[in-house]
Length: 424
Image (cartoon, rainbow, N blue to C red; front, side, top):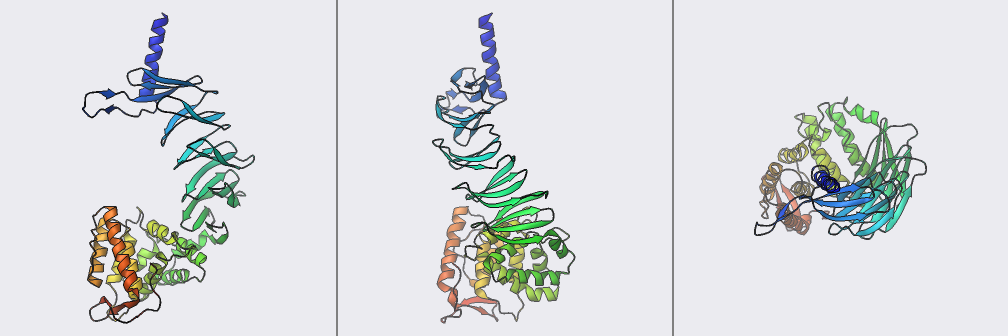
């Protein structure tokens, strides 16, 4: 009877491991002859067992406290419950390290750093050795969610506050108490941290945590009621802000400026057939292109983030396509700034889908006669190598670019036509 019970228990554990918990697959040796059993991890009282698909126990490790869950996160096998988090060796079940953690609720790995959300704190652990690097306490508040932004900031939301925490020190640089307001979303756009409430959006500098601006959401709703020409004037004014921080915030503003159809105003304006709008579009595109590659600390990354937002799934690359369209529909008597025109287009080679990249490189070739081996459907590495050649060519010739009105092309002159060199 005892033997029957033992066999039944072993079979049940094997079935549980294979069907319910984390199976890691079946491997076959290089000759295709010998199968290596897959492994599943199960919990039994205070122990974690590694059960092979054939029912054999590979190893069993007894912990100090009964775990509630065992899971492979990244390269680490972790078991945790109400009292501790334990890292185990997959090979033999040896305990690598243990961290005392009362009531852990959520674990998240970022590189070699493990973030553990507890009842009243968030702590960061070096996953290689289990060393606790910091703990961010929220007192009697309850942490609802946390998210890692850009590798250097952690967003923490409790039932009473929203905070952005420095990942290296565990210190909050932004603390915004909710005071009954409902937080809809927290985001990061390059140098801008953004909290969106039901009635307002608050912008912070990602480096210092300084509040840059507070905008009422009703202001953005008004854009939908404006005529396109009026909206265009507002956008040009936003992008012309004197402060780089405000300029970055203005770029984030564009995320909210949707038309009734749901497309960004940027798309609507650039493809508009209205003559008054088209007369102003080149100035708008020059400003946006210039800001896109602005290397100042406040703006760096923000323009890229917004550009990608405008080209996200719901707009399917319309902005980049519209940008190229704007370039190709320059009026015959217009003299656009060739530097802005070029570095905006070169930027488009990095973003968007293959179809858009094909149109962009075709436009560049028509304007300059150059290609530098760029293939729209090439691998990322191949495209990046070709773009690097475009950027090098741009740096070497930026001061001598000129617009040939007759040929509607960009030419390189012998004289220095631009006192200011390009941003690269």
